[in-house]
Length: 209
Image (cartoon, rainbow, N blue to C red):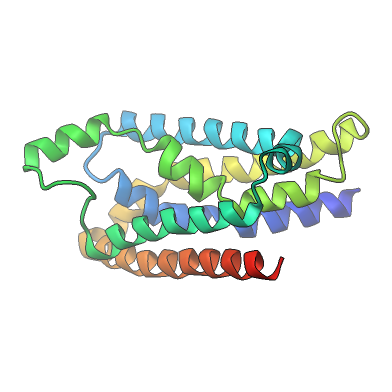
């Protein structure tokens, strides 16, 4: 069981990639105050935990009842990630053009915790697929201890995500504005490639199934 927990932790860590949240979170919260960043990070982890717990408990049964495949989630999540990647690469915000004051006001009010932080960045298609694969054979009614241990591993990964978001601002401050812009565009390209991969894999699996 220990080996299974370690394997699940490694797989889930690789899928979620907490380190990749550093430049993304920094770019999404640029110009916002520390209280806003702290609140968004905590809320995102709480929402992501709730989504993952829901899928761990009843994900497979719910999708089957609705006639929805995980590949559909993968394709849609990939599209969402691709839109975010475009904004990062071209350094622009979606929506109509606004003045600097309006942008600052909107940034204060924007809630980025659910989208895109919780979904699709932390509890995205890859993470949901991983939860379904690992928790499907381990129903909580039959294996409560193993279920709890596996979910604890998932929570540990999300706590690492929280830590990454908390250190994002000071870390990006060290590399400077130019370095931050370069990092945002570079990770935007990487995120875009990841988004395309989600879409391609989802479409391929849909046609092969």
